[in-house]
Structure formats: C-alpha cells, structure tokens
Length: 113
Image (cartoon, rainbow, N blue to C red; front, side):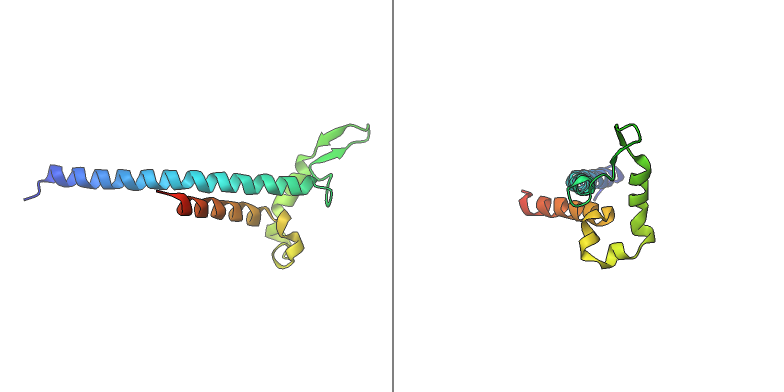
C-alpha cells in the first residue's frame, strides 16, 4: 500500500524532472532565438539595407537610432508585405527569432542523450 508521503515524493520527483527538462529545453530555444534576433539586427546593417540602426546626424557623427529600431520592430504587425514577400523575411524579426528558436529546439532534440 502506497502512503501519502510516498505519493507526494513520487509526484514531487516527477514534477521536478519535468521542470528540469523544460528549463534545459528552453536554454536551447532561447539561445536559438537570440541568434535569430542578432541575425535580424545584422541584416538591418548589412550592405543590402544599411543605416537603419546607426545613422549619420547633421554634424556627421554616427548615432544609434532607437526610433528606427522601434519602427522596424512594429512593422510586421502593421505591414502585410512582411509576411507575403520572401525578400522581406530576413528583416521580419518575428520570423528570424522564431526560426532561430525552432532551430535551437531541433538541435537539442537531435543531440540529446
């Protein structure tokens, strides 16, 4: 006969294992998503686009443009072409971050012991 203490111990260990598994999996997802977001930022400053994050002001100094970053982050929620034109996929931060997170999860699934 299983006592209440034994049952609580079994359930606690089970939940602890589930939480550890989720935390371990999330590390790979977060790492992949971070890599995807960095790729998105790179594409904003790559030769094909350029001068989105860092712009030259009237004095000739290069400055960080937070307004431009906010606008480009809002764009996939407003402009439908971010979802329908393949050439805009690399600057759709939702797609690059999501694909990076999925890739991190997939690599974790392939190489886990």
